[in-house]
Image (cartoon, rainbow, N blue to C red; front, side):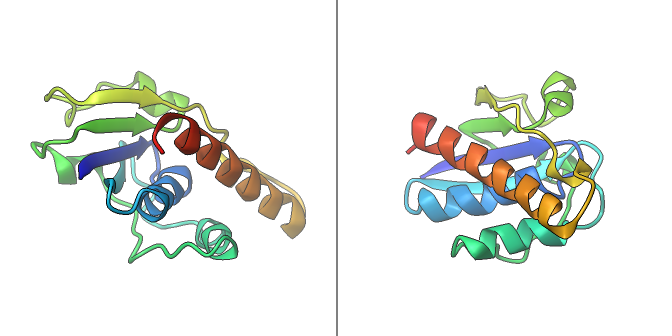
Length: 136
């Protein structure tokens, strides 16, 4: 089973969703965890709601620092935001393969509840498409 680390800056939306999605879609192939360079300290509720709408359970999600995984071996590291991709990452000291998926931050969506929900749905769809094309 390949060990995967999914990174973004805040670890509150995209990386949380990608972690749960990869563990769900890639069951038996991948074990994913997620982290952020500057963790927000909370998981955006709409991230969990989007996963649930698609029948995916996020098991005890929490926003955490990439420092928590320093020194752990990963076969694959996926950045899901442009800012995290350009940062110097202390956990990438090994020979992990790196992928970058530029996914717009749904937490920045403004407007009605429906507009925000649609932003999270769009992020979900982009993440799923990348996973299916590159990993599954």
